[in-house]
Image (tube, rainbow, N blue to C red; front, side, top):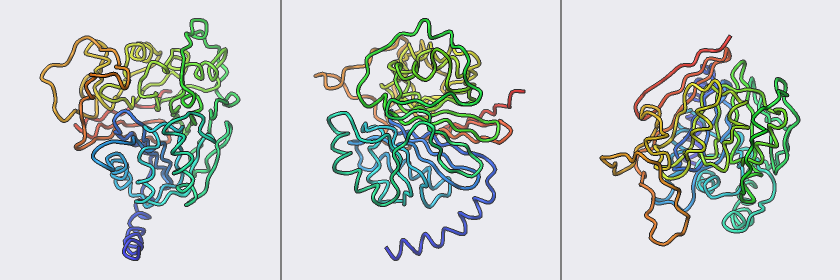
Length: 366
């Protein structure tokens, strides 16, 4: 502990200097194999981490270590606010190990877990010990996270939604053809955030389902248009309906999918037909997309450990978890690459694929 304290003390001056030189809101979309971990770093050096990746993966600590890599790249010595969107293992999995490696000042969630299984065990036996090390906040729609120069609003939590934000209230023609879908208990309770930095706007919806998208955006919108769409429920078709994708008018979307999780044809058609979309970036090539619905490789952050010589043309159907004889998804336990966004106050933002260095800058609309 004494050695750790000395190391942190040595790092503080360098981190403070780095914070003084920041001019952008930086966002790291971290590869956690179809889970979620998204790190925001403000120009003031404050941080918000949304979710902490998968659980039960080998090798041990894989996802928490990937998050720590991004934290180190950002020059942080603590996480100021950690949002747990909901109690699924692909969102809380790395939290226990992460908290051992870096202090977390505030834990934010939607309140008690409502779904039996691993989430219930985590909520009852593990999570209270973690948030006891900092502040614990149950998010309500309309709440704000206090950040210098960044307006962070909670727009959904525990199946409740915000009042319309300034700039929203437009009639949504997609509501007339909305198709509801069954969902589990926890996904629709996700904590969702709307973030504004100058003229730059982005949204992270956790795993909000189609029915919650309808609640937020019909018959008129509660969220105004954005530049960047995050937290797309891994690109799964239980979310990503046109009632959300189309009125957001996002110029760029980043999909936190896995090799065999998300990127289904319904989602790909919905997002690619959204007015104003310029590019979709992905964590992985999805077998559920095939070549029919996928993106060019320069927009995809990660490869698998043993790459096939042939990409399937037609998409496959997602296998039912636990079905006997189903092969595991293609493995990717080696070097993981993030997609990083750097946004300026004038609305300009740059997206970079860490794997291949491909970078694209989006100039603000007049």
